[in-house]
Length: 269
Ligand code: IPE
Ligand code: IPE
Ligand code: MG
Image 1 (cartoon, helix red, strand yellow):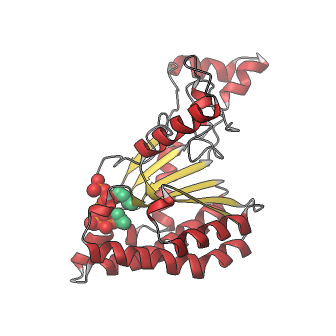
Image 2 (tube, rainbow, N blue to C red):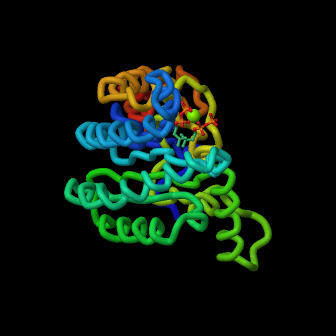
Image 3 (cartoon, rainbow, N blue to C red):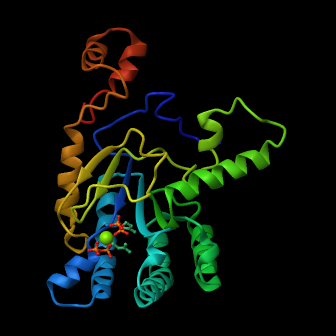
């Protein structure tokens, strides 16, 4: 069971700082191409951005950061690029996990790990175990992840857990088996690199996330760029299906129940 209610079932608590930021880190290849470098140089440089953005999220009090590192469709890329990405992931696991632990960061990976080298899988599992008690930020890396894969695997787990049940499932039943069942749904979804699409990222969990697209290529996305995304988020009115008038009348209402939901009205309330 997920600890966090579904945004379609209950209006989530919303504060000025997004509790969960999910990012499609796109544009590495184009960054490299602009510099007449091989595409993989962009991926290497992208790792530096990852470090900076993790640090900035910790400093800003973000509780969950989810980064799309490799999609279930990225296997379609040239073999050399896929191998380079795997090597880069392996090296990052070897070098970065201890540093994350020192900073009190909890590390998780979501995705279908069955296609990964056993060495990578064991480093992931060790990293997750090592950092499991940490609470400053939960960093999730989505690797060989696809939103459709996630929904299907959740459905299979749900059916295995309740073999007698044939109907009457709730959203919470399914969400409890999604790969990200340990966190709230993303408040803010960012995609760098200019494309305006989800590319099979968190299909279920993005139902009520605020979307932010930027032309900035991932290797150039820095703390200031993150702050711009958060500032844009703070201007949004998160209505979750309600009218703007309802939200504003909630804010002035003396009813204690209404004042709870007033904190859900505007991201910068
Ligand atoms: C994102 O950058 C990184 C991965 C998908 C692994 P890209 O490699 O997609 O960069 P562009 O989109 O080609 O510039
Ligand atoms: C999405 O980027 C996946 C990651 C950033 C890991 P892609 O570059 O693979 O997305 P498309 O193919 O342009 O949609
Ligand atoms: Mg791309």
